[in-house]
Length: 119
Image 1 (cartoon, rainbow, N blue to C red):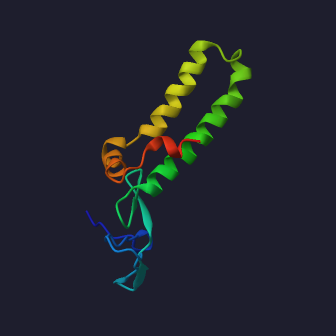
Image 2 (cartoon, helix red, strand yellow):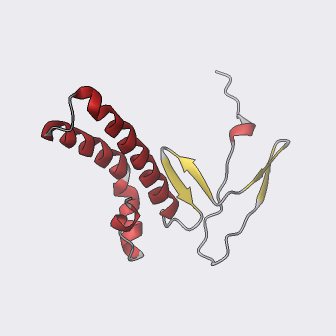
């Protein structure tokens, strides 16, 4: 196999604990890459301080969109009966908790709670 690096798809984040977010420039071949404050990796958001605040904001925005789209379907399926409301809440909960085993401890360590981000 002849695997090649897709240089235009490379992203970088500089992880540190300093107050100010720093950026670095990397050169891969002829491509210059500037580090970002956060990147998407395996469905989650990694930020420079590993505090996962960006992940929580991303997940809550996504869950709000999913909830709104599913709520619009309710009148088309016979209204909001208990079983349908349960389905709606379980779908939103699964979106909110995707990857939580990785980032929930980081939020707890900082004294933050997921509840304050839920819209």
